[in-house]
Length: 240
Image 1 (cartoon, one colour):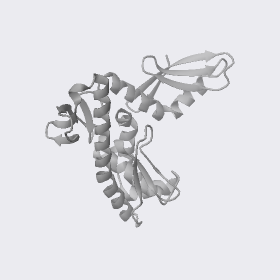
Image 2 (cartoon, one colour):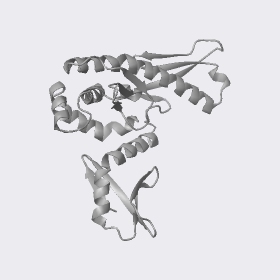
Image 3 (cartoon, rainbow, N blue to C red):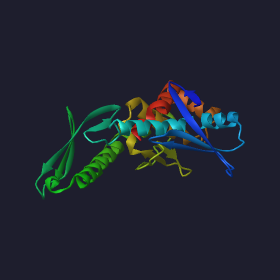
Image 4 (cartoon, rainbow, N blue to C red):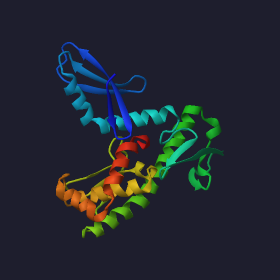
C-alpha cells in the first residue's frame, strides 16, 4: 500500500482502478482509510502527486475520524475541547422550568439541562450539544473579535466586521467587502493557533491572495507564523 509522509503523519492509501473512470478522486472512509479511485491506465506517479497536493485535506479528515473513534471528538460524550485541552464534560439534570445553562469550572464544563431525566439518551445528547455549541459561539465572539481588533490595529486598519459562523471545513475567511468570518471551533484549539487564524484573515484585508506580500505581512504581525501554520495543518483536524 503506498504511503505519503506528511510532516509527522503517514498517509497510507489504497488505489482502486475502475474501468470507464476518467478522473481521480480521493475518499476518506472511517473504516477503510484513504482510497484513491483512478482510471485503469493512470500512472502511479500521477496518483501519488495528487495525494501530495491533497495531503492537508486528507489529514484533516483522518484526524477527525481518529478522534471520534477514540471518543475525543470536539463534542464527544463526557469530554470536550477548550483551548487545546480536553476537559471533563458533565450534564446535570434540573427540574422542568429551570434555566438551561453552561458553566466553566476548575474541573471542566457542566451543562444544566432542565427535564433531562425525561429525555431518552439521543434527545438528551442532542439538547446538550446544542446548549454547548451556543456557549462556544458566545465564547468565540468574546475571544476572537478582540484578536481581530489587535491585528487590524497592527496593520494600520480599522477593525473589520467579524462574524462567528458554523463551518465544517474552514477556520476562517475574508470577504471582498472587508468582513471576516471565523469558525466558532477556534476556541477549541490552542490559543497560539487561534491567534494565527485571526492574524491570517486580517492580512487578507490587504492582500486577498497568498503571494509573497501576504506572507511578508504575516511575518510583520506574527514572526513565528510558519511554526503556527504547520501545527494547525498537522493537528487542526481533530478539532473540526
